[in-house]
Amino acid sequence: MHSLVLFAGNSNPELAQDICRYIGIKLGDAQVKTFSDGEIQVEIQENVRGKDVFVLQSTCAPVNDHLVELLLMIDAFKRSSAQRITAVVPYYGYARQDKKVAPRVPISAKLMADLLTAAGAGRVITMDLHAGQIQGFFDIPVDNLFAAPVLLDYIKKSFKNNTVIVSPDAGGVERARAFAKRLHAQLAIIDKRRVAPNKAKAMNVVGDVDGKIAIILDDMVDTAGTLTQAAFALKKHGALEVHACCAHAVLSGPAVKRITNSEIQTLVVTNTNPLSKKAKRCDKIRVLSVSKLLAEAIHRSHTGSSVSSLFV
Image (cartoon, rainbow, N blue to C red; front, side, top):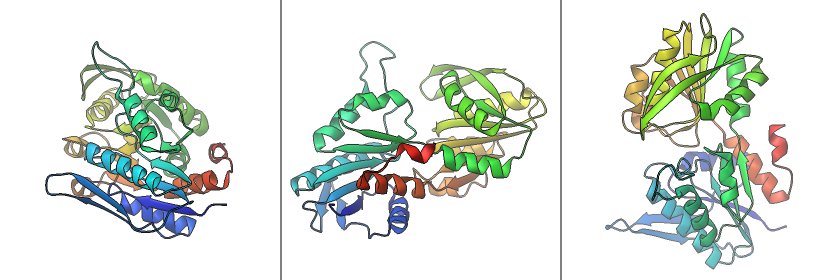
């Protein structure tokens, strides 16, 4: 079997190191630098000929820089005769642009898939895609992992009973229902009306939250507008406490300030994206690690074992 090597760009070096420690390997030696005009330069500083290469890179802010880093690294490995190249993208950027919502707009999530494939990726490992159908945009195998085991374990330990799982919009109902079923909890839905990108207005709560501990479940938190408005609506409808869980902490713009000033008592996120300095100072935000989950998926992909059995 070809030896496994893991390399990382500049998006999330701590996560890469955690994964390497779990697998028991050393992080690959690569230099990813930027010229004074912003142009990115990549140089792989060890032999990868005939090896099974995994490249870890979240496309978090600055999204486009990290995306180009990933593409250039994949191209470098392809030109260095790697046996197989797997892009490990814990947070898949542009995933929200997965369909035409207006005339004359791109389907950016599809273009992302084409770019990764054209660069030379032979497989993609990602986590909690905004829409599962994005897997169909690829002509190569895609393993879409879920942070659910990590989040479920946290919820079970932290909230014993009297909980209701809340979907912040209609699109997240399937995810929230699956959590509610596993936790033997009730389900509620926020009827949300989005008036513009990154701007949403929570209108009504469908379901009984009165006197209960409400846990809002989402795949990502960006500007936190949806989340904080949902929390306000839940408190207005009688929820005792409001907590939130999500896989991807994008936390851009006014997100941290909104969370700090909101009705939310805790926001639990995973380390698919690194937290900013401002977010690290927020007492309400707690981080769970998905490094073992990603490491296990990488190891199983390398050995040809089942990845889906991680979530049974």
